[in-house]
Length: 123
Image 1 (cartoon, rainbow, N blue to C red):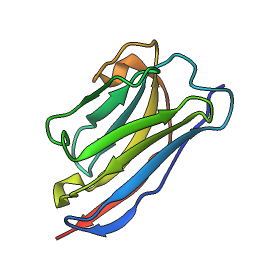
Image 2: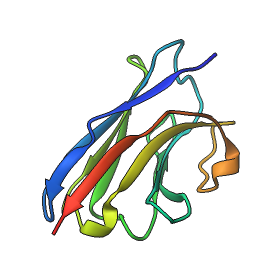
Image 3: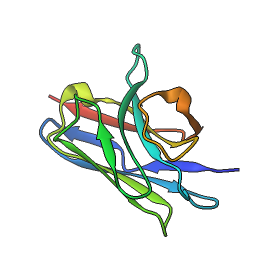
Image 4: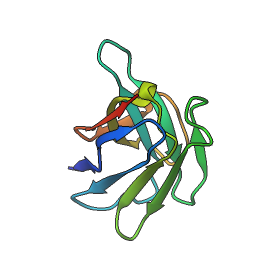
């Protein structure tokens, strides 16, 4: 069973930066694409970004240009660098493993999920 654990969340002022990490506690990410999602209280879960094993990425319009995804396949770690944070970025952030190696922004296309890490951006 694949276990995903997010870390790096915290409280930051608007305009600040945070780096989130997602580690696979068992096995490796292999050739599966990895994604990040977020969910704020009272709101639907939304797609943040995703990347393939080779490094191809896609981002939600709301974070493009501010967030950057990267992965270390050997270490089974995926990172989400978040810059120029805004109060609307406040949410619990989840990493997830896609069911295959292709990029997708749909949550139903992912099979394993972490428990999430809280990101709070103050104004």
